[in-house]
Image (cartoon, rainbow over all chains, first blue to last red; front, side, top):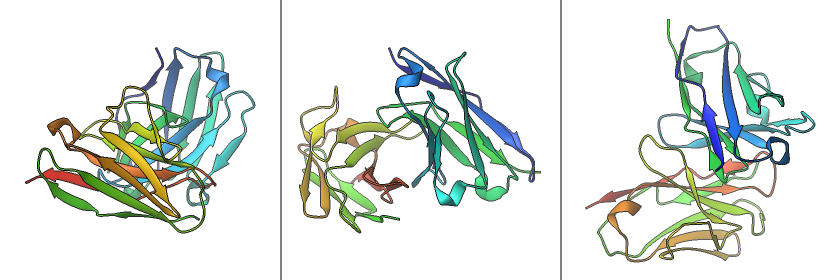
Length: 113
Length: 107
């Protein structure tokens, strides 16, 4: 069965970076884009961008272009999102999703000194 | 960016009610609208895809419809397990954009 397993919660200091992982299983990793979604305050969702695991091509929401970097490791069927120069505004839950049909469990990132 | 204006933002409901949630797209997005259900502490679950198609395993009391730029999710005979947040998403254009969400609460 399809599963997306995300890395655990992160507590990071302002100005630092964090790299989140999303390990896919149960399907051919390179057949589906991986999208990343931010959820702040437990309510609204924001689309960050997607990566094509086959080619590595990425497409970002302009709002997150200088914030997020998406990569993949095809050898381990894992997608990554690195968030840089973190501020309190980046404190949120981040999800990876296979084109919206399957979702990771989410990872909470807390930015605090 | 395409705006998805979702209403209402919250709704007080009773078991057995018929509930309708609407998203209005700021420009044509065709059939490319999904609806997601999200329960506290859980990931979103796709309920409807391509505006009117029921996702696998979703009860038939859920339905999606479209009228012009208005997209609706209807839940007939609301059950307790349906009390959750609901989100619409347009995926006709990038960046993909979500509605603001609707929170269903029991009276």
